[in-house]
Amino acid sequence: MSVPMHNLGAYQWATIQGSTFAAAQIARHRWLGDRVEQAAISFTAHGMLLYFFPNEQRMFDLQLSNWLAELKKDGATAREIENAKNIAKDVVTKMLGRYAQSGVNTYVPFNGTWTPNGAAPPPGEYIPTPPRNLWPPAAPQARYASFYVLNRPTAAYRSRAPPAIDSPEYAAFLDEIKAYGAAQGSIRTSEQSQIAQFHVEMPPPRFNRILSTILQTQSPAPSALDTAYYFALLNFAIADANTVTWDAKVHYNTWRPVTAIQHPSTWLHNKTRITDPTWMPLLNTPDHAEYLSGHSTLSGAATEVLKEIFKRDDVQFSVTYNATGYGSLTRRYNRFSEHAEEVAISRLYGGVHFRFANEVGSETGKRIGTEVVDGFKKNGWAKAFTGVL
Image (cartoon, rainbow, N blue to C red):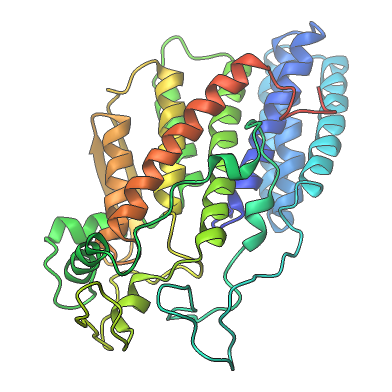
């Protein structure tokens, strides 16, 4: 199945997983039984996936048919199936209405000073980066996307400003990424290069897969409702963290390492130049501002949710990914936080994020994840499911 891999994919994941939980919750509140809960989840998942990925209808139809066959073997009646179908139809309609009103797909002009035919902006400001040199930057509207759980204004979650580009601290960060993040002539170890490529995968599919894999090992297995709850909570945290990330990206509008290192002017605190017009990062630079690191922020938020679900950090798990230059790789972890830390540092090894963007991103993500967990407990689903439940 195609999965959303772009910068707005987090909101699709949250809408899909949140919808299945809403459907299961409605069935539970109506005392319709486990089979209706499971069937409602199946119909809802089918409807949401079909909306976002219409080209995959054949596969989704087959999957739904298989799910329903299993439920009928378990004794599901025609009335139960019809009840589930009605619940799903209502939830899909309302959740897609919420998605349409969330601002995710609303055009927002980008207010940076760079223009294709204008003068270069001052040092430190974002400009398009190779290989695509895309303008305007990707997804500026994400900073305005409605929160699923967080209740304060977006600016209240904004991270502190990055170091000034003419500060000694910035010079040290710049020297570090120039040495570690280069495509050619870096000081990375072979494992660090592997780590950079391994964590290119976007956080939503990565963390959904981690949660699914671990849940399959649980005994007794969680109920359909609990499972839907876990996935909804995870994806709400990731989506809300994405909004906070994009708020920082657009607000601070900072240049990428490749721009800083190739820049010809003297702007460092000691008036020296480290200009290298041939320097390129190991990874392709994403088409948006540098600060915060999205991978670090979203991973930090998702990790806090996983720790809440399993009531501990020290859970052993493995992740497999088809990494560029390596093929199918499997890396193993002893803690959720170990994986999140590796995701963050991978962006430095890849040459696309300064250390401070990763570290502050991780800190911000942890705060978002904790607040989403607490908020979901305190006010139930009032915000995420307004007009649905």
